[in-house]
Image (cartoon, rainbow, N blue to C red; front, top):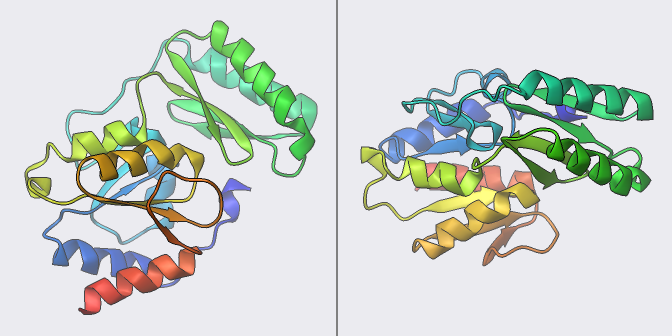
Length: 212
């Protein structure tokens, strides 16, 4: 379940230390909503980009605006998930259907979401790990990185991006194509040239960066 994550004690403090060491050239970029990020990382004071780039904290103007057909798309996603015993995840600018507990539902969910897209202008389908999501068209994590690099503190910085999902692949590529590093977390195919095995390795790597 999306709400079943465990945030290690002290992670927000570690991220604040890293942000300070990097003169604020640090951000959390996620498909999660900004509200969820702020809840999971209470105490972290740095930049946050949520909903694949549709929301942001610390950057103006907002990265995306609500689409008129949003309530319809969300209600259709929720109703379909409920009718199939699947999990609907509400997001401020879209919604997702998770099928992790019934992997055989993948094709059914894909067909439904793509049909819904035909009736929902202004959205795109975003495949993810055991999920399909509708998100605003033109919003993605690589575009979020490009937007960050317009901020003064990121000028002349070498980008390094870490991610574990298919939704992170465009951002991993963006970092590499702009002279930096894409780092894949976990197993699976990836365009990233570097890899860490699990989240615990990420925490250890960031802690070592703070201590150096």
